Every structure is written in structure tokens, then in C-alpha cells.
Length: 132
Image 1 (cartoon, rainbow, N blue to C red):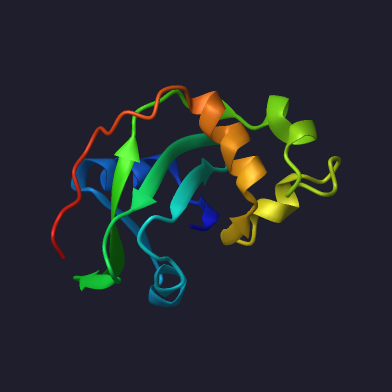
Image 2 (cartoon, helix red, strand yellow):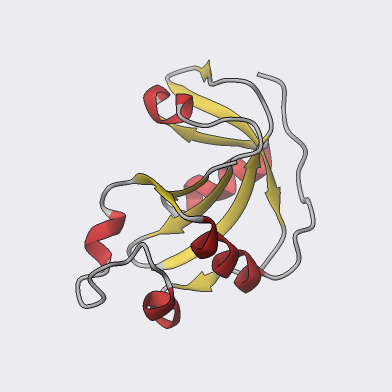
């Protein structure tokens, strides 16, 4: 199991929650395996972690012009990034913390994932995966 951050807008995540999928480019989605966890981060103007999902399928699929990966989203509260900056190890430069998220999609360690997971609260499934 690996842990990831995906930097996308809140609207993008809400669309994925409604459909049971994460969208990104094919090469990024190919890096994921069933059981991997993704934390979604919305930059401007939100600067919040907006959702957590678990990858449930075996590979990316194309839907129109976009690539998707089936996931199950967990219910929970959104988290502001500001109070968490000092506790997250993947944010190395605490003064220029926003630069790290510009990578768009990156792996984090389990400790950082668990910190975020605790902040979201309960891990109750809110959507079922859709077939690709």
C-alpha cells in the first residue's frame, strides 16, 4: 500500500465523489495499485485537504477525453492545510510550503497519511466504485 497527494480543485473532487472515480493523466493513474490511498488537496482559494479515497480497481480507463481510476471515497471533514504544516514531514520548507503541492501528484509516507486520516475523522465509505 502506498499513499499519495493529488492536487486538484474542490469541484474536480466533488465530481469524482459523485461518480466513484479519480481523474488525472494516464501516467499518474498507472502508478496507483488497488489498496493505495489518495488524499486530495485543493489549492487556491481553498488551501484544504478535501477528501480521502482508496483505489479499488486494477487500472486506469478512458472516459471521453479524460482518464479515470475507480476509487471509494471516505466520509470526513475537510482539513485546512495551515494548522498541519508543522506536523507534515513531506512539507520540508515550512515557509514555502505551497511550492511542494505544485508537483500535482506525489507520494507521501504512511505517517503523514495517518496524520491526515485522523484529521478527516471517521473512515466511512460514501460512494461505491463504478465499473470502467
